[in-house]
Image (tube, rainbow, N blue to C red):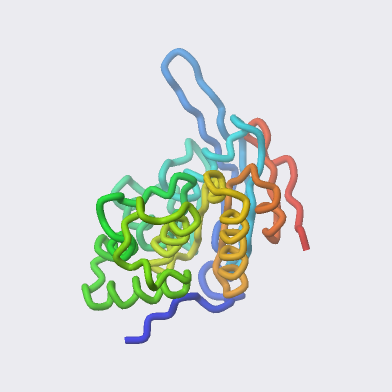
Length: 243
């Protein structure tokens, strides 16, 4: 079976070419003693194949927004469609299912399982997705090869450099051919050389058609995106194309 690594550029398809559509998204954290308005009416549309960077100071709401985009949290109000599916009304079980099928996550701290190999880590989403074993291993090996890590199949995360570990994490995020790749400070724990390598990986993925959204303080990474969205005090204050 030929398992594709990248999706091709797509100007149509799901939601008429729209990967993410948000209308008046709000998020209120209510502790019982105080209410915090983390997001205050977010309107956001991301097309298939876009590379978007979300920037803003600590406490601006960007992480809250990313958690909602990634179906890790639910908005208090508003409408959210992911690849044509209205997910804002989904329960936890349905959100977990759509996370595994449609979203790939890349984290600052990698979030790999330290006791298993690079290959096994990449297979994990496919196990939850009930992909047959032979297909899982083939796909995982293809992804490692695309990341330049064919010789690290049996290595555990503790035996890899930071840059190599993040490339394994990116490969894992791509395992289920997600509609959207979400990255939270993906270069935050890397030295400048490794960080530059990861920037190149994201640029290549986007060139091949992946829809990518990164939350970052790294303006070198943000400038690699097609679009930079700035959030302050729970609102989008700027939305600019970079090219």
